[in-house]
Image (tube, rainbow, N blue to C red; front, side, top):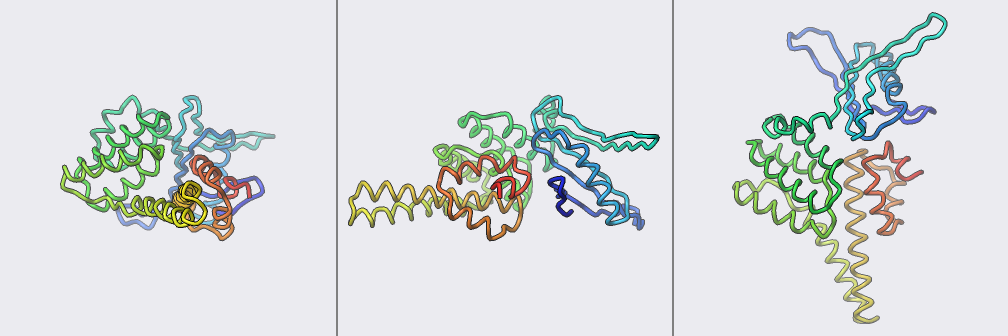
Length: 284
């Protein structure tokens, strides 16, 4: 979907499917995942609906997945009437927090999306770092106990790892717990290269700082090295998050990342889940 003056007009998911009986009837399924309450959400759903139908000329089924925690935010229709002209558009809506009361069903389900729903709910509800770590470990253990194949485990692990982010000081304990689960289950599926790269980036900064310290003073060099390591790590993590959220990144985004300090990089990382677009996140 193209951009419009009225704001964001990019559909999150647009899927073409075929009927099981082999008929040639086509339907486009548009899935819109909404992370936070939005006043004009129902109207935006209608905008997607009519633009998609106009463009492709086939039936369009619009589905809304609401991932926020506001109980009252439950849009499922857009309508207006004037001078005898009336429009009424309704769409199915799923509210993820409704599954909190059915948590046991999620734990027992073998549907791969059950874990994603669980991770999303916990990511929204739990702010305490230590508790987030324990919940994250429990979800990873559940992931290994469901009998999924290697590819599914790796993909779901990456999703959970990205959705439930931990304070830096708790990361080593989480990694150690994952190693223990993998050893226990004899399934070393999760690729830890990315985490090793984090440590390498930090070590690189420390090494550079130590080398400078020989000339300018050990204390100053160490301090600068730690700072460089943090900046390299924060930039790499944010680049990965942006790529997963928005796909290929334009050159101007890379320039923004290169120019930003650690505090700005970490601030963007905190805001990425709620940004509607790159332009919104960077206020470009």
